[in-house]
Length: 588
Image (cartoon, rainbow, N blue to C red; front, top):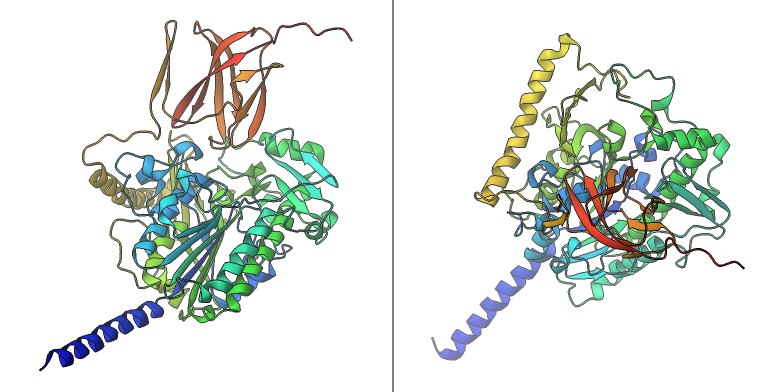
């Protein structure tokens, strides 16, 4: 054979290999991954609160599989999202509250492969927009895994309030709502601006330089997260007086839960007569979110990718709207953990059906890996939902859900939910078949000792998987808090900070008010202020997850002070200066 023939055959061979590679890449399914912050399980299709209007998500649910009993890995955003993207439970990484930081800051987990990174490594073009990790946007924040995206939309999220109607809960200052006089537009709603950008990105993908790569497009909508700033057009879709108080609240006697007390947030709502109006604000934003997600779904439907794209929608955890006299997330009750989940896989045999089996957001990483035909990962937790997408009511599926919050764990099966609290003083057992609203705690009924023993063993077995993974990654190193340790010596007192975080918004304080950013803190934290001699000037427990003004005691004169913010899993220490507090005002 002469050289020309050999080169010609080699060229044909190379072309054939390249063609096969392109065909193989083209066969891979794309992913449209949509999240909504604080979107609970009030989705109309689930049926718990049928007055909610979510037509676009209802349509998606009718085309895919609706998981009516989906649960988060932790009932606040940071641990829930870290667990979802890392594939590791909060009990494994130790990130089990909002102060836990980012998974890569944890000893032993610096090199974990996140879900977006794994798709990137396997030839996908990975695009991110909005609130996917804990930060509110995909701007250059190290906590969004910023180096493992092909491209990011860096604009903001949320919506602006207005003067038509405004209210702030005196029992929980983070809970506020207002109605904008205008209908939704790109000026008053960053969520709307973002989804239009992402929708155009989807439409233009076939003309892009990376059109031959399968895509993973993630879009995180911020609402209905507080504050509930509602455009007028969505507010007008409901009438406050027509709304019902959720069924889980009516005439319930909560048996054997002596610690269950009316929260200050609920008292604030009741005293102001705002229960229905607050529900009005929340569900208006659910409907706005549904509308924005509809823009994404319509964009995909107009492209050649519509029949080869997996669509996944979820909330990141649940949200109380008065059930068990609570508002918000951050509890071990069902309402704070129960969320919405829809998966549409074009080739799934179970499309159009509802799955009532318990599933977890922890299951999404292994599920999408399998659905897209990527190599299975042995170093993540959760169960692939592939089998339930084929047969949503499969009798063979009996995998429980496990969740962790601030040192407490619970396990939920299709029959029971058992909460094992950190101190053992708030344990709960519910028969979720007979008591779906979880009003009757069976923990002290000896008749259920065998059930508790079995659930304890099952919970320990699942947690042990994470313990083994952690030990392998640590290789003998001691787990540590995120951030650098800081010790401040004040007289005979030592303040030890373990969380690297800035809470004090202005280091120089005037007019006796300290401005604080507690957005990344626990739902409740203790603030302690010391002077330079170590004398305690103030100690106060306050609701976290908010910006707040802390009024300083009258006895604090000009000088330097230290703020100690104590939380469940650590503390932070910061110095600030008071100036001009004792100056007398000049007479006008």
